[in-house]
Length: 402
Image (tube, rainbow, N blue to C red):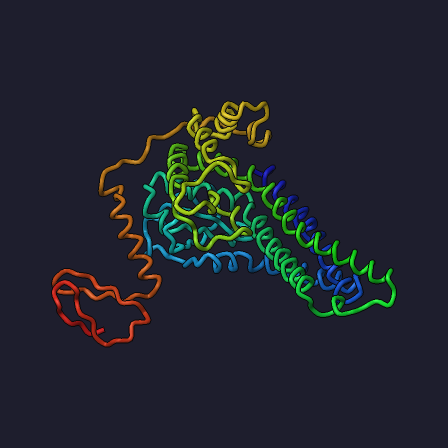
C-alpha cells in the first residue's frame, strides 16, 4: 500500500509539527509566568520537543515495550506463536522477521511498534495466546504486521511520546500555578496594570494547559481509525481467511479483563481499545478505534480476500459511496479466493487448556523460574527470588534441593 505508506509519512511530519506547536504554546506561557520571558519558555520547549522527537524515533519502541512489561521470546520459548508470526511475515512480504514479545496479562490484546520494518516488534498478551486458536491468532498477527508494513508504527510511536510530553508539562505547569511555585507567582507588580497583565497570563496559560493535552489527544485519535480498517483489510489478504480475524475480534470484544499496562497515550496502538469499565465487555463507544461490531460485519461480508472485496464489503456495511482502501490499491488488486479454516484435529490445533499450559511454561521460562520434576509426576516451579535451599512437593511430600 504505497499510497498509504506515503500518507503515513506525510502525517508523521504534520503530526510532529502540530504537536510541536502545541508544546511551544505551552512553553511560551510557562516562560511568561515563571521567567517573565516567553522567549525563554519557547527555547526550553523547543529543546524538549527536539529531544523527545529523537527519543521517540530511536527509542520509542523500547519505551513502549518497557511500559507494557513485554518480554522478548525466541522460537524455543513459544513455538506456536513464533511459527504464526513467521507465516504472516512471509505472507505480508516483510523482509525482516519482527521481534516477538509476550505481555504477562490475562486481558486479550496486541500491538506492533518500531520506527520501520527493519526495526519492528509485535507484542501479544498471554490472555490472547490462551484464548485464540491458530486461525484467530493468524488474523491478529496479520493485522499487526500490516501496521508495520504501512509504516503506522512510527506514526503511533511519535504520537505516544509527544502526547505524553505535552500532558506531563501541562500537568506540572498547572500544579505550580495553582499551588504557587517559583517565578511569577511570587512576584508582585507596583502597578495595577502589571497585576492585571499577570492575571491574564495566568488564566490564558491555565486554559491552554488544560486544552493542549485534549487537542493533542484528539489529533492522535483522528489518525487511528482509518488505519485500523486498512490493517483489517491487509490481515484478510495475508491470511485469506477474514473469518479468523472476525472471530478473534469477537472474543476480544467479549473479554471483560482490563489491560493493566495500557494508558491514554498508548491506547490507539492496540488492536482494540484496552479501556473498558471493570468487569464489562468492550463496546463500540471508543474514540481510538472504529466500532468493533462494524469491523466484524465488514470482514464477514467479504466474498473474497482481496482489497477489492474488503472495499466492497466496507461500502455495503457502511452504506457509504466512498471506500476505505486507496483507489490506486483497488485498481491494482486482483482476485484472491478465500481458504478453508485450519483443521481442528487435536494434534494440529491445541485446545484452550493446552494453550494455557504452553503460555504458562513460556512465561515461567522468560521469568527465569527453575523447574524441578518430582518422582510423583509433579513439576515444581521455583521463582528466581526463592531463598530457601529446599522445597517440599505438595503432593507426595518429598523434599528437593533447590
